[in-house]
Length: 339
Image (cartoon, rainbow, N blue to C red):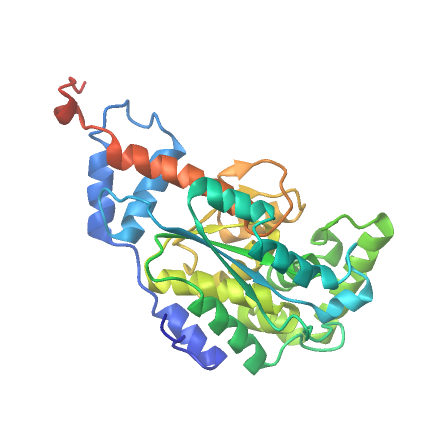
C-alpha cells in the first residue's frame, strides 16, 4: 500500500478537490445494458440504480464484486472522562481483541458476505484531548489518523465498508453534526450505548461546551474533524477518501461513520459521490445527517451497534444488485421478445 499523498490539512483538502469522477462511458454502457435485461423497465427498483452507480465507479459495464473489504478503526476519546458513555474506555481495547479473535458481529457479517476484515487500533493507550477544553487533536494528530485510514484500504478491494469502535464516539459524532449543520446540541445527541435521561442531558451539555471551546469547527469540515472528532472518525474519513482515489465504491455505516463522511462532503462538494448509505440506524440524529449529505439508506433495521455492521450487511444488497445486472441475460441472448 502506498503512503498517503498529504501531510497537512491544506494538502488533504487539495487531494479531495482533485479526486477522480465516475467513468461516464461505463456508466452509459451500464445504463444501456440495464435497458436490455430480461425484466420490465424498473422492475428491480433501487437495485438497478445501485448496480449502474457501482459500474460507473468501477469503470465496467458489467462488473463483479469479488473482494469486498471492511475496515474497523478504534480510538479512545478524552471526552469520555465526562461520563458520556454507559461503558468505560477500557471496552474499546477489549472489543479490538474481540474483532481480532473473530467474536464480534462484524466478523460474522464479513464471513457471510466474503469480506476481508482489517482492524486498526489508533493509540488506544492515549485518548484524544477532552474537546470541552480545546481541540481533540492537533493538526499532526488528525493527519496521522487520516493517513492510517488512507493506507488501510487495499488497492485490490472492489467494495469498502468503514466501521468504528470507540467509547464516547456518539458524543463526538453529535458534536461534529451540530458544528456542520447547526441547531441545538439536544437535536443531535442520542442514547448511544444506552445512557439514561440524565446521561442524555449530560451529552447535550458536553456537546454545547465542545462547540463553545472550538469556534473554528463551525461550518468547517476538517476543523470539526480535528477539534471534535476522534482518531477513528478521522481514519474512516481517510479510508473513504482513499477508496475514491482508487475508484472503489464505499458503503457508509451508521451515525458515527456518516458524521465522519460529512466532514469530507462539507470540505469538497461531491466528495461522497462514490458512497451509498448502507442503513438507517436507531441513533436518532442519523436520519438528519443522511438528509444533509443527500443519502437514502438501503436498509432500516433499527441497528445501532457500529463496527461497520449495518454497512457490512448491505454488502449483500450490493452483491445482489450487481449479480443481477451483470449476470442476467439480455432479451436478445435469451431469445425473449422485448416488448
